[in-house]
Length: 129
Image (cartoon, rainbow, N blue to C red):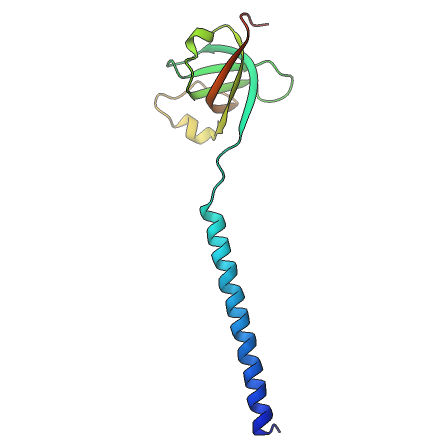
């Protein structure tokens, strides 16, 4: 049997543990909530290929000339006008667009293996292989 002094000490230690666990749980939940709120913007990447005409001046299809990667790149939007580059080999730089999002756009871009929003276009050659 515990003496009143020992019993009080045990209760005090138990309360400290409970409060410590509660504080740790609160901290973890707030960190998790913050992590979910801060999404990183998609990373830019560059691909090379031949431009084919799209439905609008800012849409096109780029046929990838690299051995690896998607063969058709659907350009859903571009800061640069792509029409003057039709038939040219270009480097396109931009961010990936999820397939479902791209195919739901109006007007929908041509079917492709990969979709991008373009931030820069650089002509590599006036002709395509």
